[in-house]
Image 1 (tube, protein in one colour):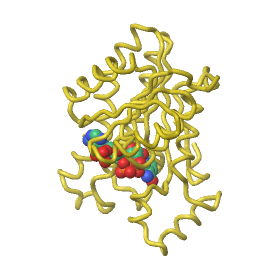
Image 2: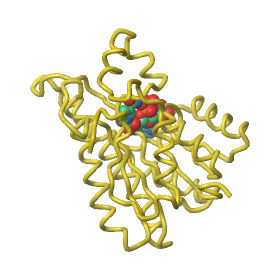
Image 3: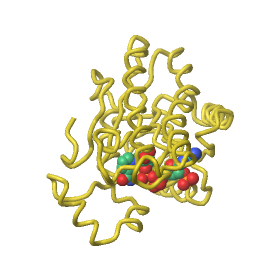
Length: 252
Ligand SMILES: NC(=O)c1ccc[n+]([C@@H]2O[C@H](COP(=O)([O-])OP(=O)(O)OC[C@H]3O[C@@H](n4cnc5c(N)ncnc54)[C@H](OP(=O)(O)O)[C@@H]3O)[C@@H](O)[C@H]2O)c1
């Protein structure tokens, strides 16, 4: 028996990066996974790769800033796999550069808050009622080390949105614990996704590595293994935590 045997899991933002690694690890551990994003080609590649490894997956599309699209996605997953038992609200990213607050554009601010905090809220709002009815469920949100402490490399709108996700997680954990639902948050430091491999020049990479007591950058699988633990019954008495997956660069 595997940790997530037959559980239905939705991992938002799993067409690439950290979300794709979580989808793979969940499927390897017995979950039936809804792979989500907006890029159909990338989604198909992740779904096919899970299927080739013997896992069960479907692919679903939705803009996580639009509630009606999330609702349509939820209904599709319920039809094709059954009720969602595990939700990883991972979709997000940073949509403005770091720098002085007064130089931050209103568009950059709104995009970061919408794409992270509002998207997490809307996704949970859609999936939570079914979990409450069934008196069972598991929700994992994704923050960032940017939301854990001030840092000149962190864009303020992104950091503020991620910090918002942390308190949303904890308020929700307190609210829904009596319904048998656990809610936890993972806060990763820089993770070497394909996008970050392109974005971070080799020279800067060493500087980043040196900022971690464990002298390497994180890999998507580091986050995926933490998500697997939180999603499994092994973490049955853990709720409302913000788990730093950060090589020691942030310490809660
Ligand atoms: N990588 C890091 O160093 C790092 C560190 C700390 C925290 N994080 C957080 O971890 C999460 C994943 O990051 P990542 O680096 O793996 O990101 P990524 O490689 O850029 O992938 C982002 C994923 O989110 C999806 N997505 C973004 N906005 C969406 C929207 N409005 N509607 C639907 N899907 C949307 C993308 O879908 P499509 O591409 O298909 O459109 C993609 O699947 C994010 O919340 C990020 O803030 C990342």
